[in-house]
Picture 1 (cartoon, rainbow, N blue to C red):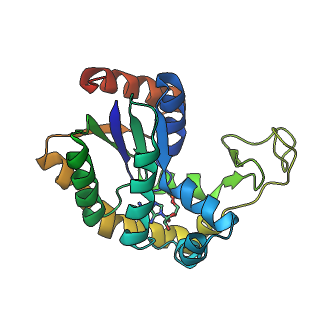
Picture 2 (cartoon, rainbow, N blue to C red):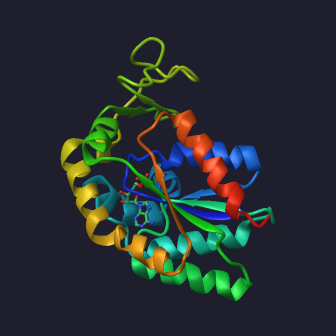
Picture 3 (tube, helix red, strand yellow):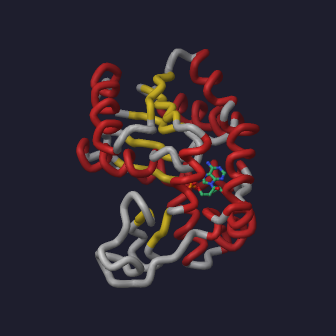
Length: 218
Ligand code: AMP
Protein backbone atom coordinates (compact mmCIF):
# COMPACT_ATOMS: atom_id res chain seq x y z
CA UNK A 1 0.00 0.00 0.00
CA UNK A 2 1.43 3.34 -1.02
CA UNK A 3 -0.52 6.31 0.20
CA UNK A 4 -0.21 10.02 0.88
CA UNK A 5 -2.06 11.69 3.76
CA UNK A 6 -2.95 15.26 2.87
CA UNK A 7 -4.60 17.96 4.97
CA UNK A 8 -4.07 21.07 7.06
CA UNK A 9 -2.07 20.84 10.30
CA UNK A 10 -4.15 19.42 13.13
CA UNK A 11 -6.51 17.28 11.03
CA UNK A 12 -5.22 14.06 12.59
CA UNK A 13 -3.02 12.78 9.74
CA UNK A 14 -0.18 11.82 12.08
CA UNK A 15 -2.43 9.93 14.51
CA UNK A 16 -4.06 7.95 11.70
CA UNK A 17 -0.74 7.35 9.94
CA UNK A 18 0.60 5.81 13.14
CA UNK A 19 -2.38 3.46 13.43
CA UNK A 20 -2.40 2.42 9.78
CA UNK A 21 1.37 1.87 9.71
CA UNK A 22 1.18 -0.46 12.69
CA UNK A 23 -1.94 -2.28 11.46
CA UNK A 24 -0.55 -2.97 7.97
CA UNK A 25 3.13 -3.18 8.96
CA UNK A 26 4.18 -0.51 6.52
CA UNK A 27 6.57 2.40 6.88
CA UNK A 28 5.37 5.82 7.98
CA UNK A 29 7.41 8.70 6.64
CA UNK A 30 6.46 11.89 8.45
CA UNK A 31 8.47 14.90 7.32
CA UNK A 32 7.38 16.85 10.43
CA UNK A 33 8.74 14.10 12.72
CA UNK A 34 11.96 13.77 10.68
CA UNK A 35 12.54 17.52 10.77
CA UNK A 36 11.82 17.75 14.52
CA UNK A 37 14.32 14.93 15.13
CA UNK A 38 16.91 16.81 13.05
CA UNK A 39 16.26 19.97 15.11
CA UNK A 40 16.61 18.03 18.39
CA UNK A 41 19.86 16.45 17.23
CA UNK A 42 21.12 19.81 15.97
CA UNK A 43 22.18 18.38 12.61
CA UNK A 44 23.01 20.92 9.85
CA UNK A 45 19.62 20.17 8.31
CA UNK A 46 17.92 20.73 11.67
CA UNK A 47 19.69 24.03 12.16
CA UNK A 48 18.50 25.17 8.72
CA UNK A 49 14.93 23.95 9.32
CA UNK A 50 14.38 25.31 12.83
CA UNK A 51 13.76 28.97 12.01
CA UNK A 52 11.22 28.11 9.31
CA UNK A 53 9.42 25.65 11.57
CA UNK A 54 9.23 27.93 14.62
CA UNK A 55 7.53 30.57 12.52
CA UNK A 56 5.10 28.09 10.98
CA UNK A 57 6.62 28.43 7.51
CA UNK A 58 7.55 25.58 5.21
CA UNK A 59 11.11 24.30 5.11
CA UNK A 60 12.52 24.82 1.56
CA UNK A 61 11.43 22.22 -1.00
CA UNK A 62 15.00 21.18 -1.85
CA UNK A 63 15.68 20.23 1.79
CA UNK A 64 12.48 18.26 2.30
CA UNK A 65 12.61 16.53 -1.07
CA UNK A 66 16.17 15.37 -0.33
CA UNK A 67 15.07 14.04 3.05
CA UNK A 68 12.15 12.05 1.61
CA UNK A 69 14.23 10.63 -1.24
CA UNK A 70 16.73 9.39 1.31
CA UNK A 71 14.02 7.76 3.42
CA UNK A 72 12.30 6.12 0.44
CA UNK A 73 15.64 4.71 -0.72
CA UNK A 74 16.22 3.23 2.76
CA UNK A 75 12.87 1.42 2.88
CA UNK A 76 13.37 -2.24 3.46
CA UNK A 77 9.69 -3.12 3.50
CA UNK A 78 8.33 -3.82 0.05
CA UNK A 79 4.80 -3.60 1.42
CA UNK A 80 4.70 0.13 1.08
CA UNK A 81 4.55 3.41 2.89
CA UNK A 82 2.43 6.24 4.18
CA UNK A 83 3.68 9.74 3.50
CA UNK A 84 2.41 11.98 6.29
CA UNK A 85 2.83 15.71 5.69
CA UNK A 86 4.61 15.29 2.35
CA UNK A 87 4.11 16.55 -0.31
CA UNK A 88 3.04 20.00 0.85
CA UNK A 89 3.73 21.99 -2.34
CA UNK A 90 3.24 21.33 -6.05
CA UNK A 91 7.02 21.08 -6.70
CA UNK A 92 7.21 18.45 -3.91
CA UNK A 93 4.34 16.49 -5.50
CA UNK A 94 6.08 16.64 -8.88
CA UNK A 95 9.36 15.47 -7.35
CA UNK A 96 7.56 12.56 -5.65
CA UNK A 97 5.94 11.54 -8.88
CA UNK A 98 9.35 11.57 -10.64
CA UNK A 99 10.98 9.48 -7.92
CA UNK A 100 8.19 6.89 -7.96
CA UNK A 101 8.14 6.76 -11.75
CA UNK A 102 11.88 6.10 -11.79
CA UNK A 103 11.27 3.14 -9.43
CA UNK A 104 8.31 1.88 -11.48
CA UNK A 105 5.97 2.46 -8.53
CA UNK A 106 2.54 4.11 -8.46
CA UNK A 107 0.67 5.72 -5.57
CA UNK A 108 -2.47 3.79 -4.65
CA UNK A 109 -4.34 6.69 -3.09
CA UNK A 110 -4.12 10.19 -1.64
CA UNK A 111 -6.39 10.78 1.35
CA UNK A 112 -7.49 14.34 2.00
CA UNK A 113 -8.49 14.82 5.67
CA UNK A 114 -11.05 17.58 6.13
CA UNK A 115 -11.65 19.44 9.43
CA UNK A 116 -13.08 22.94 10.00
CA UNK A 117 -10.70 25.79 10.76
CA UNK A 118 -12.34 26.35 14.16
CA UNK A 119 -11.78 22.74 15.19
CA UNK A 120 -8.18 22.81 13.92
CA UNK A 121 -7.36 25.87 16.04
CA UNK A 122 -8.92 24.16 19.08
CA UNK A 123 -6.91 20.98 18.47
CA UNK A 124 -3.55 22.68 17.87
CA UNK A 125 -3.74 25.23 20.67
CA UNK A 126 -4.51 22.49 23.22
CA UNK A 127 -1.91 20.03 21.95
CA UNK A 128 0.97 19.16 24.29
CA UNK A 129 3.86 16.83 23.66
CA UNK A 130 6.55 15.04 25.55
CA UNK A 131 10.03 16.39 24.75
CA UNK A 132 11.56 13.03 25.70
CA UNK A 133 9.44 10.29 24.08
CA UNK A 134 7.37 12.48 21.69
CA UNK A 135 3.99 11.17 22.94
CA UNK A 136 1.22 13.69 22.25
CA UNK A 137 -1.75 14.79 24.38
CA UNK A 138 -4.50 17.38 24.35
CA UNK A 139 -5.41 19.47 27.40
CA UNK A 140 -9.16 18.78 26.91
CA UNK A 141 -9.52 15.76 24.63
CA UNK A 142 -6.63 13.54 25.72
CA UNK A 143 -5.08 14.88 28.93
CA UNK A 144 -2.29 12.98 30.68
CA UNK A 145 -3.36 11.26 33.91
CA UNK A 146 -1.77 13.80 36.28
CA UNK A 147 -2.31 16.88 34.17
CA UNK A 148 1.27 17.95 33.40
CA UNK A 149 3.59 14.94 32.98
CA UNK A 150 3.87 12.29 30.29
CA UNK A 151 2.02 9.03 31.12
CA UNK A 152 4.72 6.99 29.39
CA UNK A 153 7.95 8.48 30.73
CA UNK A 154 7.05 11.10 33.36
CA UNK A 155 8.71 14.04 31.56
CA UNK A 156 6.97 17.44 31.87
CA UNK A 157 4.91 18.12 28.76
CA UNK A 158 5.51 21.15 26.57
CA UNK A 159 3.65 23.03 23.86
CA UNK A 160 5.35 22.85 20.45
CA UNK A 161 6.58 26.34 19.52
CA UNK A 162 4.67 26.08 16.24
CA UNK A 163 1.42 25.27 18.10
CA UNK A 164 1.44 28.77 19.61
CA UNK A 165 -1.19 31.11 18.22
CA UNK A 166 0.87 33.19 15.78
CA UNK A 167 2.57 30.16 14.28
CA UNK A 168 -0.78 28.33 13.98
CA UNK A 169 -2.24 31.28 12.02
CA UNK A 170 0.81 31.22 9.74
CA UNK A 171 0.63 27.43 9.24
CA UNK A 172 -3.02 27.67 8.22
CA UNK A 173 -2.21 30.49 5.78
CA UNK A 174 0.69 28.50 4.34
CA UNK A 175 -1.61 25.48 4.00
CA UNK A 176 -4.20 27.48 2.02
CA UNK A 177 -1.62 29.05 -0.26
CA UNK A 178 0.82 26.23 -0.87
CA UNK A 179 -0.72 22.89 0.10
CA UNK A 180 -4.42 23.19 -0.78
CA UNK A 181 -3.56 23.33 -4.54
CA UNK A 182 -2.52 19.68 -4.19
CA UNK A 183 -6.20 18.76 -3.85
CA UNK A 184 -6.82 19.57 -7.50
CA UNK A 185 -3.36 18.22 -8.46
CA UNK A 186 -4.35 14.75 -7.21
CA UNK A 187 -8.01 15.08 -8.23
CA UNK A 188 -6.85 15.56 -11.81
CA UNK A 189 -4.82 12.38 -11.49
CA UNK A 190 -7.88 10.55 -10.09
CA UNK A 191 -6.05 9.60 -6.94
CA UNK A 192 -7.95 11.59 -4.32
CA UNK A 193 -10.42 10.46 -1.64
CA UNK A 194 -11.86 12.89 0.90
CA UNK A 195 -12.31 11.90 4.53
CA UNK A 196 -14.16 13.67 7.33
CA UNK A 197 -11.42 14.11 9.94
CA UNK A 198 -13.72 15.81 12.46
CA UNK A 199 -15.12 12.54 13.84
CA UNK A 200 -13.63 10.62 16.76
CA UNK A 201 -10.26 8.96 16.08
CA UNK A 202 -11.76 5.44 15.92
CA UNK A 203 -14.55 6.50 13.55
CA UNK A 204 -12.07 8.19 11.20
CA UNK A 205 -9.85 5.12 11.38
CA UNK A 206 -12.68 2.73 10.37
CA UNK A 207 -13.61 4.96 7.45
CA UNK A 208 -9.96 5.15 6.41
CA UNK A 209 -9.57 1.36 6.51
CA UNK A 210 -12.71 1.01 4.35
CA UNK A 211 -11.39 3.51 1.81
CA UNK A 212 -7.93 1.97 1.66
CA UNK A 213 -9.36 -1.52 1.22
CA UNK A 214 -10.94 -0.37 -2.04
CA UNK A 215 -7.75 1.03 -3.52
CA UNK A 216 -4.81 -0.90 -2.10
CA UNK A 217 -2.90 -2.98 -4.58
CA UNK A 218 -0.70 -4.81 -2.11
P1 AMP B 1 3.91 18.86 10.82
O1 AMP B 1 4.31 18.15 12.06
O2 AMP B 1 3.65 17.93 9.66
O3 AMP B 1 2.79 19.83 11.03
O4 AMP B 1 5.20 19.72 10.37
C1 AMP B 1 5.76 20.69 11.23
C2 AMP B 1 6.57 21.69 10.43
O5 AMP B 1 7.62 21.00 9.71
C3 AMP B 1 5.81 22.44 9.33
O6 AMP B 1 5.09 23.55 9.82
C4 AMP B 1 6.94 22.84 8.41
O7 AMP B 1 7.68 23.92 8.94
C5 AMP B 1 7.84 21.60 8.45
N1 AMP B 1 7.45 20.62 7.40
C6 AMP B 1 6.91 19.40 7.58
N2 AMP B 1 6.68 18.79 6.41
C7 AMP B 1 7.08 19.67 5.44
C8 AMP B 1 7.08 19.64 4.02
N3 AMP B 1 6.62 18.57 3.34
N4 AMP B 1 7.55 20.73 3.37
C9 AMP B 1 8.04 21.80 4.04
N5 AMP B 1 8.04 21.90 5.37
C10 AMP B 1 7.57 20.84 6.08
